[in-house]
Image 1 (tube, rainbow, N blue to C red):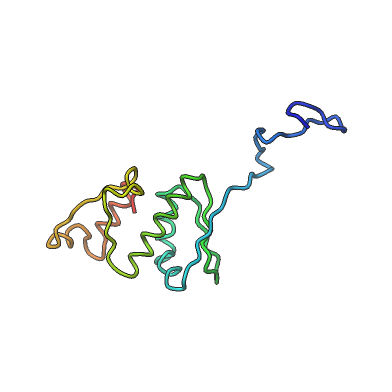
Image 2: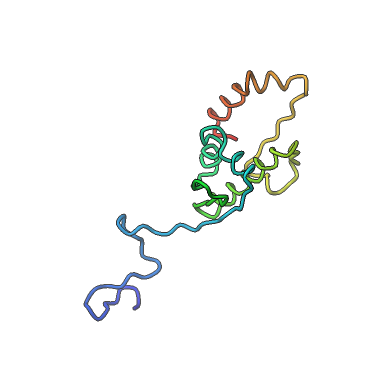
Length: 142
């Protein structure tokens, strides 16, 4: 039926452009990332903190059901894109140093690279990473 037209029961049919009511949840697009056991543990982090941080800074929803190695990412196209990028960066940290290039177009709008001399790294991270975590929380970063 066309938008605004009545169907055979006298009720208006919903077009694609019509919004959904609260009792009819709209299905959000989803992306999936297959993980190894080690990557799944790393993405979750202690108490699920890493997964929560990625969700917070990307705006996406991240679900990793128990005993599953498939990370489900929901949200807008941009939220899912950011979440996937952040998950990939976190997984790369598990196997070695991550080197970001400020000329890489994947990082141009949402990444600030701060060069820290190696003899100052302890001051930046703080005891057990506490200062770094405080900065992440305060500025909404990962």
